[in-house]
Image (cartoon, rainbow, N blue to C red; front, top):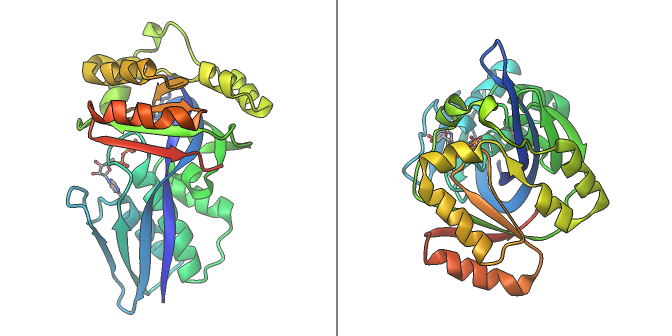
Length: 284
Ligand code: ATP
């Protein structure tokens, strides 16, 4: 039997880092939502007790370092499944971009294998498994829009933000999430974004309020390390995006745009600057 699962990219509408915890993780407050840019996973049962990963891209690990591999291994061990699986990752989400591509692949693997092997694992249990793989995985298991607290794994579902266009632009630079968190200094933050105000903006369905509450405390760190990301951000504002923010630890910068008539101009303007540009809708 063969099944397919979509693994959409996430963006952070706000991201605040509160403090570093004794266990080494950072306590965060984030509001995340998903966009219609997704990897597609094909999963095929194998009679042998083995996990095989393949992908059309050559620059991600295909061994136990791959998060889809780790998710398959975890579910096999925890639910004593002796069958194997072949997983093909059709990657569409840029890698190491701040869009949780690997986490979303891991979450899609958990959902897919739950179906493929008829395990009937409830969603909350899949999320708990996901938390063992990475802080963003529990959110990616259910998707939608949510407030994430703790190290990102404690979720409160929210309504979807007002529908709009999302223009994503990623420069060909690698940003290490660990390095960005390592360089982050909370005493240097002048203004923290507010989860409460973003939540209110979403609940009111106010697109202008969502745009004005966008904020990410990791932006300064990544923009200082990579001034070209700051330039890209400025370009997106100049081209007329209604709200602009870096997602996660970057380097992807996204712009929210309400009017379809503006999308082509912003997209084309950015393409002169940056090869990887996508114009997608929110997955609400
Ligand atoms: P986050 O926003 O959660 O920090 P990200 O979008 O910045 O994630 P990913 O695309 O998940 O980053 O990739 C981070 C690293 O994880 C890559 O450098 C890659 O080597 C590794 N990786 C492991 N599994 C995958 C996968 N399935 N897809 C992409 N990268 C993967």
